[in-house]
Length: 234
View 1 (cartoon, one colour):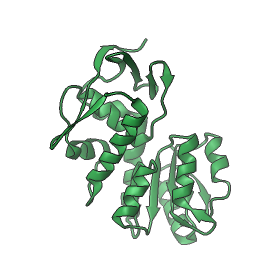
View 2: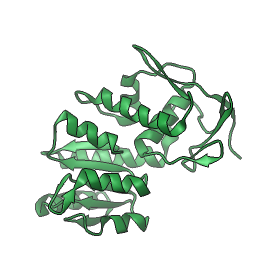
View 3: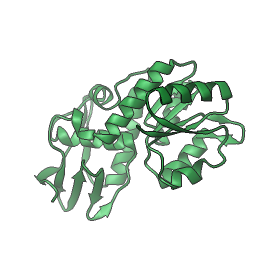
């Protein structure tokens, strides 16, 4: 059972979504506005956030940015803003999934389940054993999938759920070129028009956080993780 924050101003939608999630044995904390959301996030009592964009007292995109400043909690946008630019912005702000209204409640619950599995047991869908110490020239990365821990040269690095999943998948396939389609299939389990661009956005964010040349682009094919695996973390 997970504790899920639901931010939705439409009472009927909020009650329906909450009801379906509770039938799936999840606990929900409901908000009709942005008021109180950040305080709840900062108490670290929740496992996932479902967030509308158009709220009566603020903008869901702005709220997501504030959330990402303090937490890497999994985040799903549930919104009527369905343009490609809105979806890309959502992923750029750190969303792990983006669902457009009207939506299937059953599909939403399945996506919640999939996201909780990905963030709770990342290594299940990878082909190798990415945990351990990695080196690249004069830099060292410690990747611990059991504890969801990433350190670069001894400094902890915070990743979103999507960034973490991509990094683990790339590291598990170290030295191999991984296509955008493979990343979408293995890390997100969905595809929509323009979604390949969201992979590029996540990769760009990862590179910024990792620094150096850990992830390289193989033009026309995809991406490749460059580190050399040393040992499992103690």
